Length: 270
Image 1 (cartoon, helix red, strand yellow):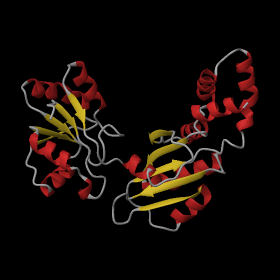
Image 2 (image 1 turned 90 degrees about the horizontal axis):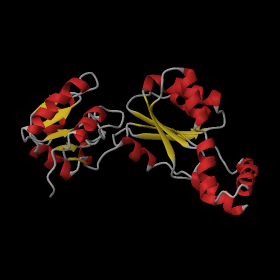
Image 3 (image 1 turned 60 degrees about the vertical axis):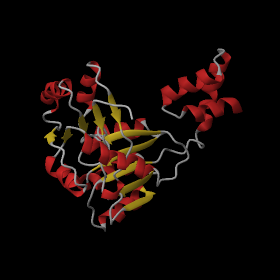
Image 4 (image 1 turned 30 degrees about the vertical axis):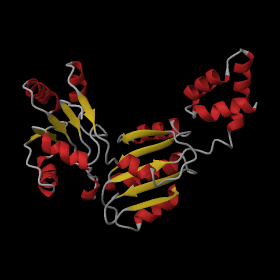
């Protein structure tokens, strides 16, 4: 097995059995584990009888820890990075550290494993594979509206907190009243639940049910079949200027944030 200096290790998002054998092996073999909350990580380590020493690494000390980690790696020791749950660098600290380590030519690898977005999407049937991951949505109403309007032709996936979910759904309902949404909470846990319905019905459901746990949600893309002809004239204009199908699909995809594949098929049909 190839030897690395730095390992990015996913941890379970709920069910501890979802950890991989390689993740356990890696966490046991490294010299140090960098983690967000040492109390959370220690529970996981205790469960799998891993006695590797931990060091805190979170969004408030990211920059100041970088030199420390470089010093440790230069001494020949190995480090694993974990987040409280899921895959590091997905709305979790790690980007600053990984960027600096690559500048210093350290050997880095990432293990596959638990991820809330992938787990959620695998339970949601969609007409296309493209999606825009927004992470945690911004706090202001106008910023949220900008995102859900700009990406109306793409599935929008985002994280949300229980105390903000209904407010966010109401903004979506106001901005795109015909949108369909899906909300997943407590994924892989005992009370896992995924609700896919109109935004209005989803709001009513969660107003009448206790809302707890980590949440991943999606706004389904608008049905582009109904407005596909909107692009016909522009496709014809670009064709008349001798642009090829691939070029046209790239141009219109960038301009209107529509799937390149959908535009490409439309070009071939005209």
